[in-house]
Image 1 (cartoon, helix red, strand yellow):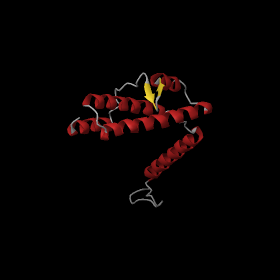
Image 2 (cartoon, helix red, strand yellow):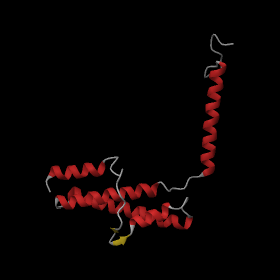
Image 3 (cartoon, one colour):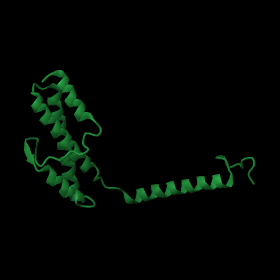
Image 4 (spheres, helix red, strand yellow):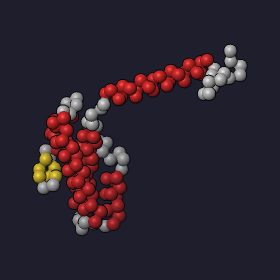
Length: 147
């Protein structure tokens, strides 16, 4: 593979929007073991939340996918491979990234802290509105021309 081709592949893999429209691979070999990646991701995403007993399985899968992604990226960066092999690796990396994005969105949300955060933000907005409506500055004093 020529150096400019290598750079082109690395740029494609590094693009922020690379995963838009990308498919999750049907099956992928991760750490020497076949994994039906698309089925795994859809099975996990079908649930509203990931149960605690499944959380470890998902975390292990994400860890293994990241490791596999890095190994494939290193092969593009430093390996003596053909451009066609590099394209295949780049496509698989983008598919892994797509699967990782889907799995990352499953992180459980602490509903109580999220509700408290939103309530605090609502109160702050309300107080700012009242201060503006009453003509008060940030330090609590009234602005000139206000009643």
